[in-house]
Image 1: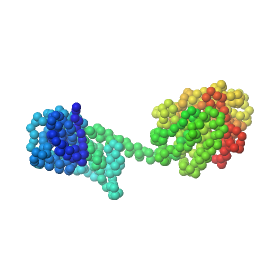
Image 2: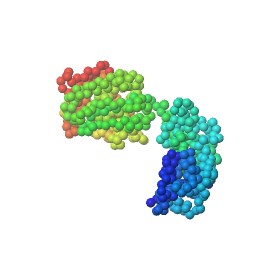
Image 3: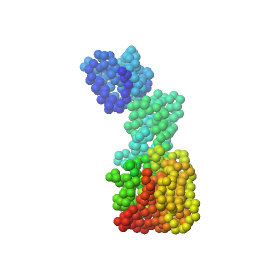
Length: 529
């Protein structure tokens, strides 16, 4: 079975060697480079003559003291440490079985304090570039500025420009990626001297990681890996600076029931979508507002769901309304909103109606085909058109507006009352569940909605507007934002039920929400918006 070379820090290495020193029937050998930094200490089982374990790592004060005492100790009670001068010592995680076998064929070096001390001093001299000798203040300042004073090792967030008592200064280690000396870790005969003073070759590290990459396990951290870490940190810092210019948005998720399944919302994915859109969320979490039945009775295709709609969601609706007016999470300083709508069509229309267009609103559409809020790159931009009624019209009639984005709403899908009304149709150049996911396509769709709504209200002077929709939630939400309460006629929003004729979900009348049934018990009166 192969024995891989293990790398340990000073404390762990000392504990391992102490166990070996006391273990019976063991033979411990140490191989080292006479003019280098590599060493290997291996334990063999005497009865079986097999290699048991092999270690290398950090030669700190604890291990050096132990090795000096072990090599020079006298008497047969302790296992003697055998020394060998080697070449081509293996790297970490390499099978050392053959190396140790060949090593034992060589003559051993007499274990003296002088021999070990010379190796220790030579090794420290090679690794002394960790203490940034000869680096100018310009280089030091450049590296600290590049790293923002944070350890550049991947995943480390150690702050190195102050200590635990908030004393400011340089508390990190400036490690050479390519060693300043050719025979040091990642050293190179052609490049070490040239790169010794180059800031691009210096990596800011905390104590733990500077020992890891130069003294404990240099073999696992070649030049390319460390350079990639530095590059990643530069990209991160550049990104952080760029975000300072991004608009700050107050983000909300507007979640409603969907027939037959519970809607869920991913905070992580929503924040990712905001960052990809170059928008800076004002708080750590996207504020979640629910028009959703937590008990599970979310059969929106049943008329009874909507007849009890205001009773079930009265508190939530008022909470959203108050928040948007400036008394809640968003406040009067929320100059821009980012909204993540997901749920049934009537609830989404209501959400858009509550939000309105008094502020700038960035709408995100859930990409059902990909299961994410993150917008696609590059954009796929369909066109959107609205079609006015073809027959001669009289002003003041009831009008039907159909939002047909996911699929066509055929005459067979409507009831006789709706079919009798003049119909305005809003449609894309190609039907689909993701037709408004890009900001450009959403903007074009909103422009079509604006024109269609203006035609219904200003040209036809509709007495009532009836709405049926088979469209992404964000598209219905966007249309709801067009319905300005101060001037609109009564609006009737219909639920398009599966294999059923559409039925009334609720009505909107200026500042009033009305559920199907007899008022006033099913009426929610809002203050003037």
